[in-house]
Length: 432
Ligand code: NAD
Image 1 (cartoon, rainbow, N blue to C red):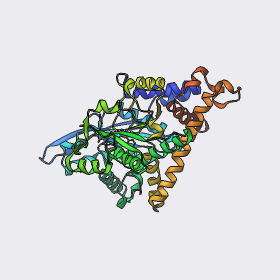
Image 2 (tube, rainbow, N blue to C red):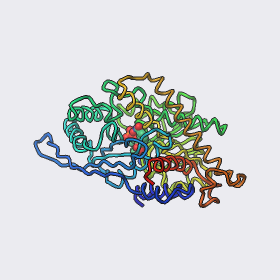
Image 3 (tube, rainbow, N blue to C red):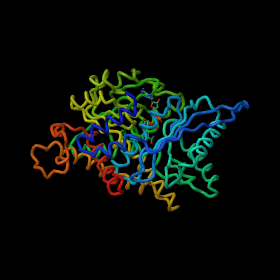
Image 4 (cartoon, rainbow, N blue to C red):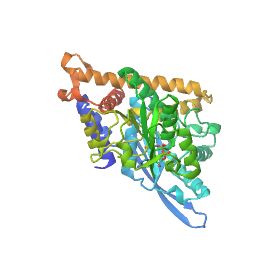
């Protein structure tokens, strides 16, 4: 099943539970706008090379489209459409007034010099300039794009406009309109959600594992370590390391920066990536990439709680197996929404030309993430208690398949919250 088909399946599943009108469902099956561009780049050797890029705006019903840009050889239109749709849902889960977008260029950035990367970045934003802008669609970093690339995007777009338009992208360096706290925002949001979940369920996690020791994974490992939760294993694309006494994320980071892999840390046991997923632990953070837990390995997962910092790290089949086993999954559309939330803060600060301290950013982020978790839990509880409620229950009234209400997962619950908000906006704006 393609990634976009998977996303539609998740929406359909939640729509059926919610009783979303067919009209709203049909609209969400189609991105509002798809732009495919070609980007000719003069390479350092004098040749012209042409790269293919995309920008997809899935839904702008709740506000300007928002979503990152990926520079990766695997980028194709199906992946960009799926990621754009997830952004529409994610912004609605945390209730920020933005829609969903995503972009990408099919390129291996390792094959480019820094000057070639700059020319490609400037070429891409020029090509998509007609459809982006602070009030239309605001790109941000994603895999293999970074704050420097965002600075080039903002500069090129500002030159086209004839004035500074820094709010055209987020995830910029602080010196050119970036927000304090953006670098660690995705991890921080995930930790706020986990903390609140633990408080609500009176849990007491002692051990954690982090798959994917990149930007999100490193920050989350460091935050867990600082809170006294023992990080017993971490991994990157080259493999993993394990130490039941606990691993110091700062030491792993320093060693990875110096030598390139988490496995370069001395005096720890090296493990394979598949083995890391099967280790017993209280919380497993997935911070690598899509489809890492699937029907063939989901049964071996022993973690009690999984937090999805990556987008789509569990396939629908894997999700079902985990739900049957009673593993709690805090879904990507909630758990990793800290990144887009601080991007939203960056956009606001750019528009005001007035900047907040890191403490202010974190305080606001905490409020939004905790509220979103509360709402998702509340929806889940209402659905669980279906048989005890009469016909006045909000979700009961609409549920087409009430039996399923007993078993909804946090993912379904988050989708329900989001779709309900999107449908309400569509109705109020007279679209359906
Ligand atoms: P990143 O490129 O900095 O890190 C990804 C890490 O995962 C790298 O260390 C890579 O080596 C590792 N990895 C890749 N395949 C692996 C595998 N099979 N097993 C173990 N490790 C593997 O990327 P990031 O910015 O940290 O993003 C990670 C995920 O989180 C992505 O899915 C991204 O879309 C999602 N996400 C990131 C943000 C953000 O603000 N950074 C926001 C929302 C979602």
